[in-house]
Image (cartoon, rainbow, N blue to C red; front, side, top):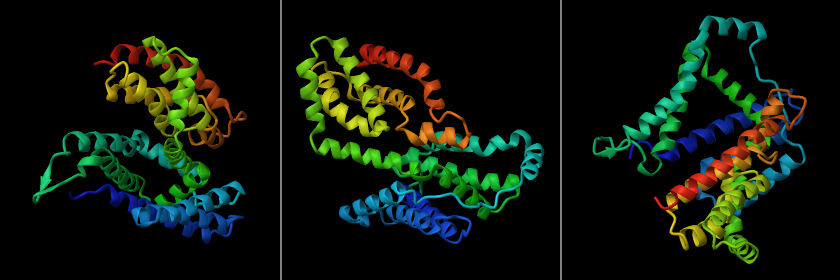
Length: 318
């Protein structure tokens, strides 16, 4: 293949290294050394990848958690344009500012549908196992290039803006990855079997609707606790989805998995544990109530969860 997913991991790693260097040289950052170390360690995960022994990767994650836990990631100065410059640029560009944002989904759709089987010189253009993610990576790079062209900014200014956003998100950037790994650890530790034992001991799953409801609600509740659907999925799917819905009621595994993840996302909408989705936006918007985003989303999440239960009940055997 010509374009591999690994190439975009290297791009991310290089960007994080540059963020670490910019943090280190930013004398306005009160914790520049620890901030730089945090982003540098995160860069190593992307750049070294599978070359890292599992123990080494685990140590890196623990060190990052300690740095973040002791408040070692702080904000600095980012070379931002003044309010007048931003307003003038926005008035000059108008709706063309939306072009970079639209390039990303457009490229992703085109790449994952029309270009996934394209060959050049006898080689596949896109990694067949990760065509969507590779297309997303290409779209992101195209969008950055287009944004620089439209705004007449340099790639370095784009990196400054990237660092500003990453610093505002802080440790929450890493949270989805950490929680996804935690879900796998729970599965390896047998939590799925423990969940299955508890559920089958206290709830009658002989009724199909009850089994479907337990699966979907369990996905949402475990996501509320963990803060991430990827952490909830292996546990609840291993405890209820596969042994009960697939094993007993012969559900389509693809439908079970897809609607299960939708149910988990309902939990994401309702928990402050999903900090990068719910707490960080409140901080970036400087809302007086840090849980304001969660409170607004509950009204959407609960009806959507009920809709997922109904969908899975009627579609699980398709």
